[in-house]
Amino acid sequence: MKTKHYALLAFLLAATLFTGEARAASALGQRLSGKILLQVEANGEGWYIYPKTFKRYYLGRPDDAFRIMRELSLGISNNDFENFGMYAPSRLRGLILLKVEDAGRAYYVHPDTRRMHYLGRPQDAFDVMRTQGLGITNKDLASLEAENGYQNSQPQKPSYPISAAGWKPPSTCSGTDITFTSSPVPVSEIYHIEPMGKVAAGHVTPTDHGYIANSANHQPAISDLRAPADGHIVSIGAFGKPNDYRIIIWHSCTVSTIYIHVHELAPEILAITGDLGPGKSWEGDHGPDNNKTPTIPVKAGQVIGKMNRSLDFSVHDTAVALAGFENPALYYGEQWKIHTVDLFGYFESSLRSQLKAKSLRAAEPVGGKIDFD
Image (tube, rainbow, N blue to C red; front, side, top):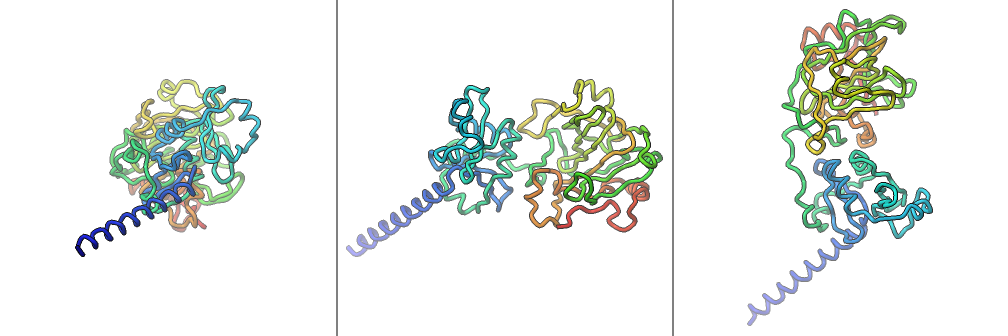
């Protein structure tokens, strides 16, 4: 008889504990309603707490976040939207609004500020997730119920380091080791290299790129630009004036280079991208979630364009996260910045020595430093 009595007490105690945990989880879900959560103890994975159910939805990659946010949206008329101004009413806190009369434009309403954030493209949704997200522990996240079909949608973790800032390679990437065998500008034509780390003009943080000059006193001079190693061009953007481009090349699954203020694009590249007038851009595959447009493969030493006077050049490695930033997340708006590495470190030894000899800085690090927080 006592055995049955103890068993009943144990059952009641377990039921009470389960009910208490369920209530606590429900209360947490309500408290976090409408918020975007980031798993700070993992790899910064994003989750959205849907206000109507208090369940969590995995946001994953940019395309995942964009799709899920739009699937859970609430339709709204143009008239109602315009009456809101910049801030939605309290009853819409944490929801995603869809302008059904305006090509389905979507906006995320921040649950605390009620400010509406535009979700125009997958990358916009991903940027909102990164900038508006709230950190949460794995334990607290596990206590929140996941919506069926979304709790297991997390992709298999790649074998290479994942950037917490969202700087990621194309699906065509291979390996992590790379050695640069070609100078971005013929060494004989380099007048000097100004190292990274200065704060001047429009740069409010230390510059995350070096400046390669091919003439004295900024006089006009044309030089070929070359890929330092085999790789894939994933992005080319034109600035607001003619003959001014930015090129991003991934050379492995971790290492990338950025060329800014490119004067001309090589004809074989233009044949793929088409005309890129001021303000236009070409975007290729930025990972498994966005492989609709093939990348542009390049070989080490291949001419990718031309420079005139000066070129901004930088190297980034997602296996490296700079330790000198007090709060790295504040720099996530420029996803490459926290992964900025020495300008010369990835070149083969003899070429590295030649390039370092062109630097205006003699003390190490000759290529400069940017994380001075």
